[in-house]
Image (tube, rainbow, N blue to C red; front, side, top):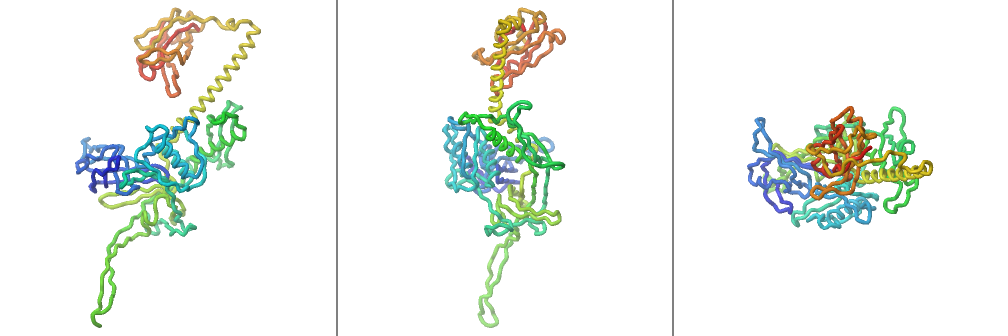
Length: 558
């Protein structure tokens, strides 16, 4: 194992580790776990940000976490644990910032072109020079993969690469060029090594019957399967646009709902209205994307028996010195006792045959993940075929990413704003119609009176006393809030109003009220106040960030 700095300068080299597990993933980011003595020579180089390598370009990891292990008595042991990602984790460091003239970063072409487009735009040649990633190049484009259309807006680049990889069947990787001290991004194309392949490749198969796998685990699960999707677009109640995907009935029908409310009725680029057919196409696309995450899980994990190296000496007959004395020589040869050799006969991403006759299992499936385990006791190889099992963290991340999707958030608030605007226009029309019938609109409501004005968080020591008791008002008080910039003062924007019924002072006098406010989309501002018949008392938490970005600016009669 070798240790490098981020510029690929060699810092130290050692084989004195307890365990080194290195995982490569065909579609996404792999990782590693290293256990090593903290007193070994050169241990000071094992710091966050440095690189560990098995001295192969595609087997390099970035140290992200350094952990001192405690024994049963709670004392630090002599060993440390280091974990991190493969170099593919570098793609986690940028998001897809769209060009200023358009809402999304869009690209159409073969899958390799699309993947390298996003790496180029956000790592090599971004508009903002501060986003440029040092010492990274892209391998020449070989235009591999099927043609696709892709668009992205403020998404993690690594996540986008994984999605395109899963769609196209191409893998991707970041490798180290030790000689030129740089990193290389490239796309990987796997081989078909099944017995049915038409490329003339030598078949590779794994089976307990052939003694080349052990510790096999096979999973065939429908836990997350959904085959009927109801996709909801914009609208409310019976007016909401709903389409159905799938055609399964009876026992085998498994339904789900896909919320696509963010898909609007106008084209984001041209601002032209979309036809019903175009809206349905967008809803269908969204539904298919979400339902692709709700398929049957077919996964097989196994430990591949690695080759045993054996040295043999072969004798050869070369002639005779005389009839009773033949001349012989010995040749030293190294033999590998195994059916197939890793990285020679098969590699990450290759499609192989898996056979287990006793289980009745025969699969032709790609190797999507390989873990190398280097320990003093020897070398082991573990592989995942087909699909990775989704962990709880995977499922939570998938849900979180869905909730924080920028497109959904922006389009949703645009939809809400549009609805508010239409509602206001409707109310204006109604009020104007009523004016002609009853005279002034003010006659419809009792007059309002400002009872207090100022700027308070308010805190527990700030007691606000309006000029009229809440029980003396027609319905109660209305609290007025507005924006506040700590260090500068109140800002005459973001006005919001909270009605407080006088029944609160009658039946729940002095008890707390939780008031949710908004300054920006990302700010969830909560105010907490105690209200009795005569006063409003705040809470110390109201002055903490981000809650201090809004203040109580007025109290009105309701």
